[in-house]
Image 1: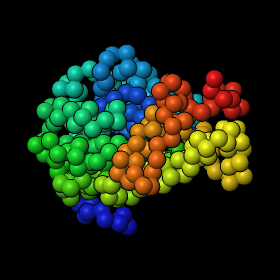
Image 2 (image 1 turned 180 degrees about the vertical axis):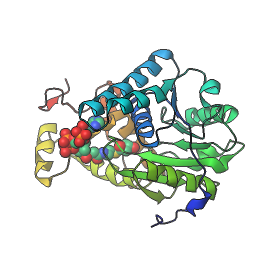
Image 3 (image 1 turned 30 degrees about the horizontal axis):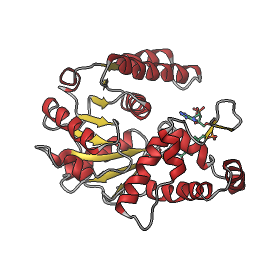
Image 4 (image 1 turned 90 degrees about the vertical axis):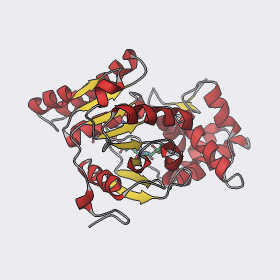
Length: 296
Ligand code: 3HC
């Protein structure tokens, strides 16, 4: 059955090579997912070779884990590893890519610049997808020659495990690009939903309301340990503060700030969360030992 709002699937174009801009936490998980499910060449780029090597190293290590768990055989592991490469030069990496996804720093100017650079080197038919958590897809596309090929493609952490994908139609996104995005989502075995290009889309709006409330409780003086203990019986898959560490407090703060700007009466920015980010901490807690400990 066609997902609600998805265009005719016959409009979808084939994807035979994928480009990933960024090689950080989200980008390298995306590279792994794309190579595993699409089995096409996946090229990562970043601002320096060290980051690229780290990203490719992560994907290779995760492929080895799949092999170790018996999910794939040695032949497939070798094939998948060979398909993942990294290059500094976008022109070299993306000249024949049909689908390029960016997962770089969450700042509109940075993302617009990345898309301008990709547009200059990628084929005219290539889809430019963004994994932004909360920024406007239309604005990101607005300075391009071909804004009709930009789509939001928003995944959830951990990417390999969570089934949801928010697909965002920008003001100018055309049906063929959207149909291609849905066809790719299907191959990735994700449950795709079409959402409006609104600040933080759907999931992060709801999640920020929820995460924001535990931060408010802490801001109002409840100790972190008490807040954490109090939500345990709710039976969430993960406590909100563990989730904050998984997602990264800087991303959490960025989403809150975007929502605060768009809906100041409904979303506020937690001073404690801001302090955590400014201090460069991993979260309110660290979970290395398996037992939560306050981040000193
Ligand atoms: N990275 C990669 N894989 C992970 C992982 C991680 N951080 N954590 C767990 N996994 C994998 C495990 O390896 C295991 O895989 P396997 O079946 O192949 O062995 C599988 O997940 C299940 O692991 P566990 O049995 O240890 O895990 P749990 O049953 O405790 O589930 C969880 C782990 C899926 C992470 C669960 O706790 C969960 O769903 N947490 C909530 C996550 C969530 O809400 N994410 C959304 C965040 S919002 C977001 O990302 C948007 C952004 O824009 C901010």
